Image (cartoon, rainbow, N blue to C red; front, side, top):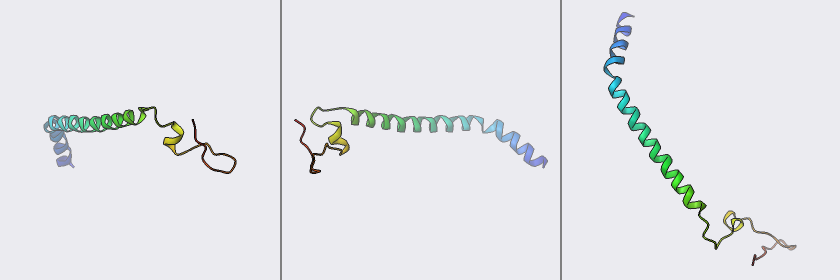
Length: 72
């Protein structure tokens, strides 16, 4: 039991710096992933004026016969 406590105390002191570096590296990794996701979302949100939101989502207005209605 004493060996576990002594080993734990030593590892907290000795490995603190390394644990901090790993935390910074992991934080940077995930922030880059989030930045790529945000950039992708922004690029999808740009409306080029040629497609309406209904066309993009695949939901077109339908006429009485159930055929898609052309929006002009």
